[in-house]
Image (cartoon, rainbow, N blue to C red):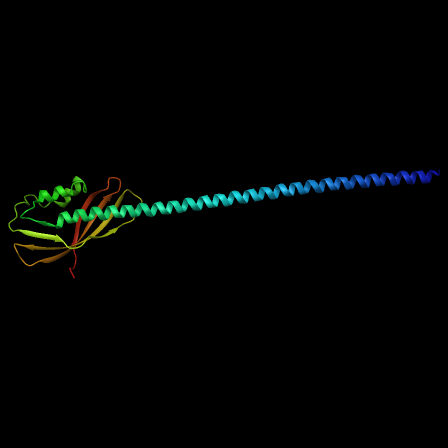
Amino acid sequence: MDKKIIFASILLTLLFVGSAGMNILQANQSKEWHVQQERYEKQLSDKDSELKDTSERLSNIEKRYQKLYKEKNGATNERISRITKKIFTALYTYDTKNQTVQDRKEKLKGYMSEGALEQVFQNTEGGDEQTAETISKLIRDPIIYVQSADSDQLLILAEVHFEFSVAGSDKMQGHYLYQMTYDQLNDTIIGFKPLSDLPTT
């Protein structure tokens, strides 16, 4: 056989083998690339799922917080409303013929601190010695305004409407504004301050 033919055959064989090897290598590389691509896409998908789960958890936490915040504020306002009504009913609904200052003071214990009670009755020493019978009555529930605060103490403004008569006189109406400090932890009024008369009409 001619040497040229033999050489050409060997060369073709080598080229074929090399080409086949390159094809196999490229196929393997392509397969590896697809595997890596699938792995990367799966990682992205997992991350997306994690982010969605985290976002949902955060959203649920925020909703629960808002719900609890509203419930807490609502419960606090209900307690304030209840205490305020008890206090001003005791202060403004009385007949001095049948009820002493000490009687009214006793009704307020449990709703007000000792310091607040002293502020309420600071000008009533000897107040049981009434010269004329006074009859008073709260004519509507107090109107309250609560200042929002992150602390344990809240500032309250209370409008009080009442009517009274002295020694059998015609009934007269009164309208007064008070400032109180409410201790949330102890559910008690710890500060009490009369502010001013308000118009009755």
